[in-house]
Length: 128
Ligand SMILES: [Zn+2]
Image (cartoon, rainbow, N blue to C red):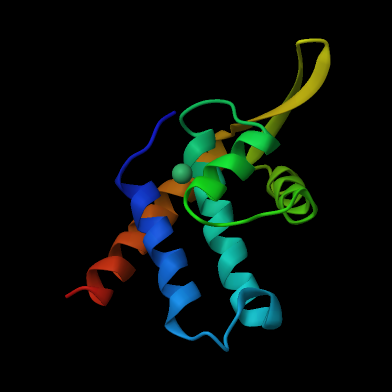
């Protein structure tokens, strides 16, 4: 699967938040929760820009980066991205089962490019 620098940056940011203060855990704080949702969304948009992706694949991809995400957290995020017209879903039958694949829309592509500039600006400042 496609990986690149942005993927690494996102993971780094996630880790920074995770490890910066043990008291400040993701599920305990609305602000952090928003923060994480933002990272997750960006990570999803990034991969959906490369190829059509599906729920379990995303859970595994984020898990590979040490981030545990349940379907109960992921699916509402996918639905909100679709509602915002950043992703478009398509059902495909794989080995007799219907699986929902998500692809980036042109609006999603525009928003991803915008966000990447913001992430770069932030990362540059954090490490200057
Ligand atoms: Zn990734």
